[in-house]
Image (cartoon, rainbow, N blue to C red):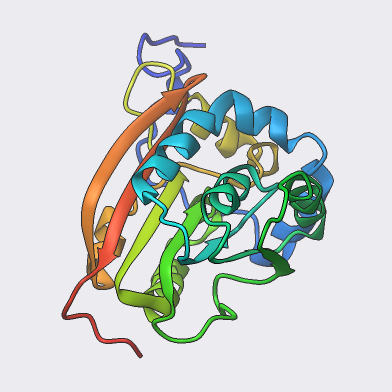
Length: 238
């Protein structure tokens, strides 16, 4: 096999065509039900730095109305609820297994004010312009490009005019070795939980958001982007 010093050292990693989703949305819930019991190991080893930075950028103030979409096992939601004891905290996810883990985690927060429910990003159980903050970690890397706009329209619908959107995604690697995970995805998408590297800034701007911050974070060679955005003042809520 021909070797190269770029990427992870494997020549087929040099394919630069954008990767699209290869695990259907109907399968995602079942995939994450199966890995719910071990997900925290992965989350702490590869995602914790980006997730912690997202919480910093969110600058949560007690009393806010907050929704986390794709709450997973509650790694970020736990921090949100602690910082917003007198506000409204709602978390949704497709996977009942992940929600059960989140419920167990949140039970440790004394006097916590929150609700967890099964739900989809395509149809949020939230009124128009009612959220101060919407948080979404590691979901768009599961979504087909052609469907991202629909979700962002839904995010825009539920955010207040001055509301914040904080996103974390697996992104395209920018340093040596960081494209290893896309190589694994090309071989077996489900090994990566259906995740592949994406960049969301262009999609956000197309859907009426203003990007305030976009940061790159790499942990255990795993590349993440952290984005803070606001709904553009001129955006029309449908």
